[in-house]
Amino acid sequence: MDTASKLIKSWMNNAGLIATVDPMQNVIGSWPSENASSPSIHLGSHYDTVINAGKYDGPLGLLLCISAVEILRLEGYEPKHFINILGFCDEEGIRFSSTFLGSSYLCGTFDLNFLDNRDSEGNTMRELLESRGMDTSQFNKAKPLISKDDLFLEPHIEQGPVLENLDLPLGVVTGIAAQSRIHVSITGKSGHAGTTPLELRKDALTTAAEMILAVETLFDANSNARATVGQINNYPNAINAIPGKVEFTIDLRHPVTAGLNQLKEELLEKLNLIIQKRDLPCEIDFLQSVDSITCDRGIQKAMNKALAKHQKSVTSFTSGAGHDTLKIAQTCRSGMLFIRCRDGLSHHPDEYTSPEDIRVALNAWVDVIRELDQNFPES
Ligand code: GLV
Ligand code: MN
Ligand code: MN
Image 1 (tube, rainbow, N blue to C red):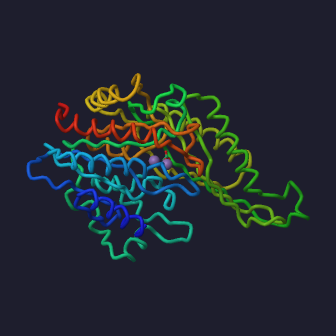
Image 2 (spheres, rainbow, N blue to C red):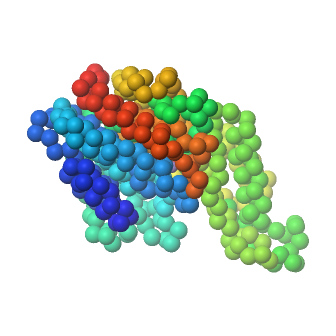
Image 3 (cartoon, rainbow, N blue to C red):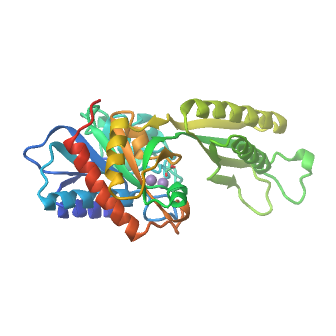
């Protein structure tokens, strides 16, 4: 992380920004401007990735922000508002299973309970941050950088097929789906694979398998929803031993919070029936839930106007993927631009966005920033 934050800081400095790294490892680049005033316009995206992923999810958006500001500075543009570029340290929430760490920190809404979350090696987030000299007792105490009158704007690859199907490089995001992360732990009894008859087994893995299929059935019955079991640990994980314990995660999404809540209820009902039938102790923990958001209409309007100059038509749609914008929109008015990616593929090493689309995105992004700085939308 140190290597990445140092590199991003150097890119920001090269673009003429004053760059710093905060205690969470967010990288912040401020446009030095004598005539600018509040409220601020914040631009950015995250620079962490999921394991074995592509290089566009997050970093492309951050680079577009740095490059757009560099272009505006070279043009001699004088912003009316303070402009900051934010490189968020942890959006994916892989190591500690809890997401939006960097963006919530910058909004002063970081959930302090996350400090007790453990990584796969048993370290808490608090221990790791403090071992790097950070004073976690000060979290959420200082005035946050992002405040309610500001604007936040994020460019990001689409991570889905809509733009490719419409043959358009860019799209405007109308809102972001609600999401929940759930952890399930099933305790069975380990034993010998060659001797233990079926009636004496307490197999945690076959119980988990039934639950995972129930998650898929739920998803199948709700076309708006998404439900994924992406992580599983099986103990002792030996070819000749009955699985004595299994832990797995469930990632649930729905375009609106009420739909997500309904989905959670249905899921719990299904899982509880399986627990009763199998009669194995099971713990179900809700790790994190974030409500759906609507992107600010004034920002959407400005983006529509800017995009119309760069492509044959303008389209808008909701994001199923989570973004820092989902968290930041709880603090200030926010908006997102989507950039086409090949086959709608993301969280995969073959993730790809063409240089031509990146060029269109950069030109449009410069226009979006200029438009919103000149005509800051009424709240
Ligand atoms: C982030 O990419 C997410 O949607 O989980
Ligand atoms: Mn991602
Ligand atoms: Mn992302």
